[in-house]
Amino acid sequence: MPASLRHFQAKWRPVRMKEMRQDSKPEQNSDPGRSEFALARNVLLATALAVAAAFPAQAEEAMSRAPTPEERRMMTLQLEAAGFSPCSQVTLVDGRWSCRAQDAAGQRHQLSLSNFDFSVVGRQPVR
Image (cartoon, rainbow, N blue to C red; front, side, top):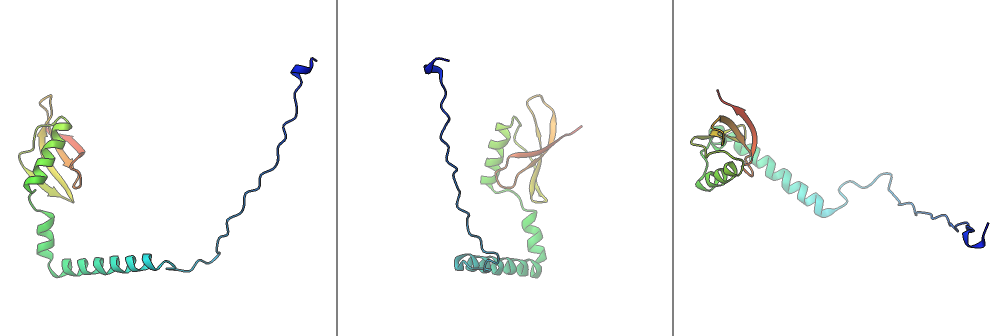
């Protein structure tokens, strides 16, 4: 075999990774910032539940409200982007907006819109 084609064994050294130390029993709520945040969140949640329990009619009314003009504008933009005509009647059902709209082919659909970004999350053809 010619000398130029001779292979040399690679010099490999084993590499050791340091093991990370993990406490077998970490202290609960060891981060004071997190515990204060959790406490504030729990107090806010308890207050909201107490208010909803005290005023069930107002809580139900808030869940069945009509869309604001800004929400209606955003719905129209999202529906046009998805290829639908604007909705004429919009209702809030189970935390999602529901309406009937017509697609580009002229078929009517019952649409379910996200309550956050008003994107179409569900559609069923209406016969």
